[in-house]
Length: 98
Image (tube, rainbow, N blue to C red; front, side, top):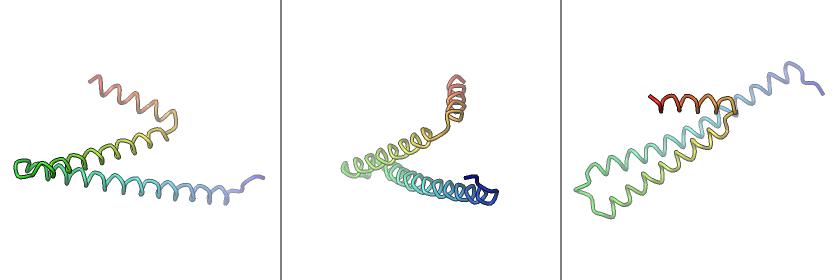
């Protein structure tokens, strides 16, 4: 069965809508995690005023959220097409050499 132009356009719009939804969910997760990291770091700037338990809690929050961000970004990269991965790896290698 062959798809007509209207069917193809509808599929393209559907895919674009799904892509936007995925980006929105990922962005929401990243914003929340970065906010938690910033709050923990801001709190830790008052190191001398914090009790040891609070210090540990803030460090654990920052670490846990940093791991989440790292894993989320790694998942996104793994989902990229091979050509995009190759280009990205090449660019990262060039930046590392500088």
